[in-house]
Amino acid sequence: MSPLDKDLGLYVHVPFCRRRCHFCAFYLEIARADRMALFHSALIQEISLYRRQEPLDGRALQSIYFGGGTPTALPARQLAALLTLIRATWPIDSTAEITVEAHPSSVTMRDLAVLADAGFNRISFGAESMVDKDFDSIGRFGRVQDTATAVQAARRAGFSNINLDLMYGLPGQSLQDWIYTLESLMTLAPSHISCYALTIEEGTRLAQDIARDLVLPPDDMLQIDMESEAERFLTEAGFSRYEISNYAKPDHVCRHNLLYWTGAEYLGLGPSAQSYLQGIRFGNVADLEAYAACLEGNRPPITERTILSASERQRDALVFGLRLLRGVPRKAITAAERDDQIDELISKGLLDADHDRVRLTSLGRRYADTVAEQLF
Ligand code: SF4
Image 1 (cartoon, helix red, strand yellow):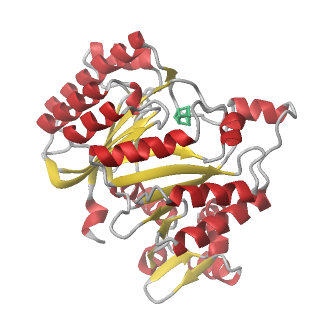
Image 2 (cartoon, helix red, strand yellow):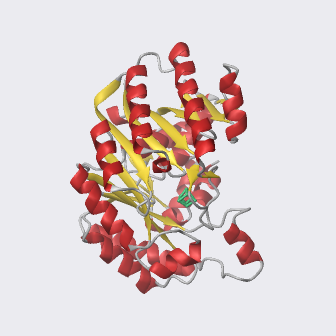
């Protein structure tokens, strides 16, 4: 296990967006000043509660990640002050990766300068596509050229580690549209790109539109072609695919993402945030009102808590570890006594193995969840 595998992270969920995209099932509210003020004061109370309980045992954080929602829905100075409070509460490794997600169409040059000055050293923009009609099809506000403006402004503000989130398989999106998006973004020289296949989540506007035959569901074969094209294009452009959906330039693998895939520990703050510490998974209530009420009463806003058994931890290590292109140590499979299943999956071309490690093949990556199910 590499030292990175032992990283400790902090995640802050900021549950606000200006508008909900049609495919989005995250816990969030439409940004309103009074709700954001309630969240901000409750979050400060949650940090203060954990300061007294010391669940991190004085260990230093190697990663801090403000996600959402849209963290930059909060004023940049408020985000800066929250990071200062976190620094005063927990030790932070001098090389820590400190990320903030931002919406390219609402963040300003001044915001970006405040965030960089505060110590955020990585920024993740939800670019999604570089074709305007794709924004319309998913109900996203803004215009595609906002991404270029925001990335250039972020660089001027001092950010050199810049991620762009993209989506493929959007309603009406062609393979040519997807290739155009990839080509257009290369001029912005991001250090990391995440490419997510559109999935239809129950209860979303998109799921309703598909059920009413207003929109076609994603075409599996087209998504496979788009995934292949992304891998080919980004590899040629100097990115390394290190996880099913993630590509990085050398030395820019996302440390925070790695926490989840390597069984490392993290504490989540904010409504709906998930945590994993000392073999226990726990999750905050996905309701701002209830979250704030718990903290007002000095109670942790936790609704679910699961103590993982040794075999559950082993299972998670395999399921998440297989998402990484480097795969998992072969001995982890042997210990799980799954040799027959592994051999069968290898014979079907879904897994690949050498003396030391087992990994998904490119075919296996398309069926990662099915492969994981067969293993357990
Ligand atoms: S901006 Fe992101 S978090 Fe907000 S609604 Fe759209 S997809 Fe969801």
